[in-house]
Image 1 (cartoon, rainbow, N blue to C red):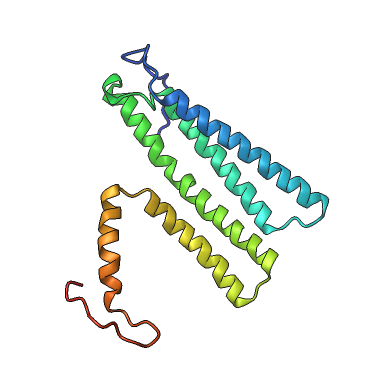
Image 2: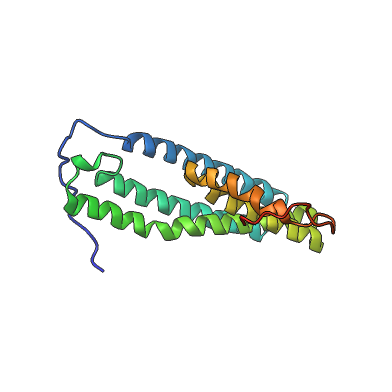
Length: 185
């Protein structure tokens, strides 16, 4: 795979910066805040000699986040955040999409590693009793499902609001069957 070494071309509308500066400003602010918080966490845990695997996993997630942010910054240099009509298809849009695709792996790993770190921290706090272990793991599973639901379209919410009551209208509660089963399900 050959790396793109040429300089980004001049934009078609150089006076319109689009949403790129706002996106970069907000995301870099959050990355710097994350670096500060995780550094403080490592400092305190090292001082009290309770540094564990959950801390190192969080450091790995931060390193991946910095990598992802670097890829986003590189996309910005090629015109990320501008309207498509101000970009040339090749090489600007192609390069932006290529690096968005490349950054998808670090983005997925960030979420997975951070959630594993959170579960390990919860196990460290509450102990490793099976009920507590499953509840903390279940919490992280629900959070990952929740983030997918929050990214869905409003039409999906309407579909869910109509489907869920119909689904549970014939479910037995405490061993008693519902009075009126719903034939639409």
